[in-house]
Amino acid sequence: MSGFRADVLTLYPEMFPGSLGISLAGKGLAEGLWSLSTTQIRDFATDKHRSVDDTPAGGGPGMVMRADIVAHALDSVSAADDDRPRLLMSPRGEPLTQAFVRDLALGPGVVILCGRFEGVDERVIEARGLREVSIGDYVLSGGELAAQVLLDAVVRLLPGVMGKLTSGDEESFEDGLLEYPHYTRPQVWEDRSIPEVLRSGDHARIAKWRQAQREEITEHRRPDLWARHLNSGKNLARSKASRKNATGT
Ligand code: SAM
Image (tube, rainbow, N blue to C red; front, top):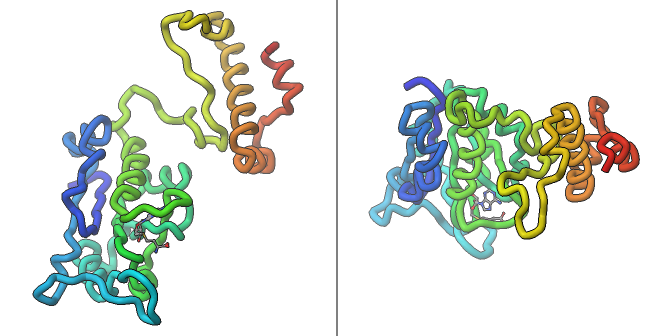
């Protein structure tokens, strides 16, 4: 099958497609715009209890997923010449960003290993070149939801999945800024009106207002993104005062 191919290795294949089976991602899946296969890691266990984990070397709490079993599972779906990135969902991984999501969406697909227990034996991470990716600074009980978050973000960018709804180009993070506020009918709701500029029909003014809003929201809510944006050199970022001049607000 052509198109973006996702392989997910998990102890809970029944969690898939889960949220990926509905709405845009689900429609894309049904239409063959992308494909999803799950592999039960336990199928590669070698004992009668189908164990995939063992106690941590050096002691400590919990259990660790065994390198040999995880490697067998990985090798069964991704040969050495597979050009898809191999990811391990992991709280200590690099933070998932829209830039990485976009890169993945341009590629042939992805192989995702979902951890459980305390995590995965370090040797298989090294030996199979797994890139560790985190969806945030908190600890989930397993990598499955994290994999669904990543795949949802990627799949919606695949050609044909979003259709004409939006190109995604103006969304949060696409150029380092958060998105401007949205409004729709009714024009007045609980004494709150849609900002006058959005009803003006003046597209240049609307664009300026939206850009100023993006800058203000980013500066206020995400000083980290704002600082990066200011340092990027290609920004049109403006001070609060010049934003006021630009929009007359
Ligand atoms: N002992 C690990 C630690 O302290 O970093 C936490 C393991 S967690 C209970 C089990 C699995 O959930 C991880 O191996 C990973 O696959 C997944 N996981 C948990 N939090 C995650 C996050 N923020 N991003 C991505 N995956 C996560």
